[in-house]
Length: 174
Image 1 (cartoon, rainbow, N blue to C red):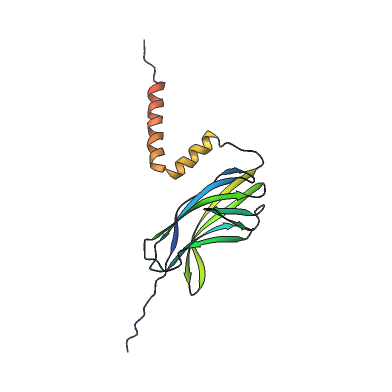
Image 2 (cartoon, rainbow, N blue to C red):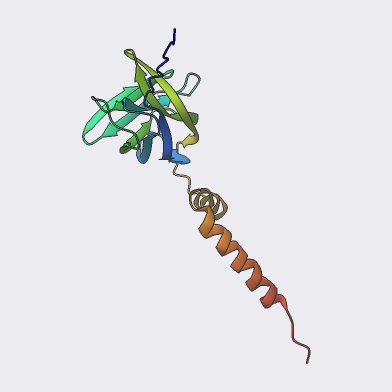
């Protein structure tokens, strides 16, 4: 007797990219965006924006003109209502408002659904400092964020800058 085993694959949501503000003023909207990529089989693909337990307060997510309040320990799920094939991307962006000062940890989940339940497959985490006053990011913080988002460009730029500094520092003998 031969037993045939069939493995049914599911969708698998991987966060391809995501951005949240590093610093923001309490009560003001800032932009965010994320892309979940289905690297599994055909299935239901989703993405979650998580306000973790222990954060200072609630957040408000605004997409188009709809605002949704997300208490600590809960998340907002965006998803395709029907199955999508391999390599489909879920692109979402909007605005976020933080309702209390302090440091928040915001997570972005890549998700899929199995048997009526949602599971997260991937996670990106962001630390957001919420203050009473507008805090401008330092040049160094801006450069680090740019480097994280564009590693090849920065590697070339840094190499050029180092080479330039060596040439600049060289003194000719008179």
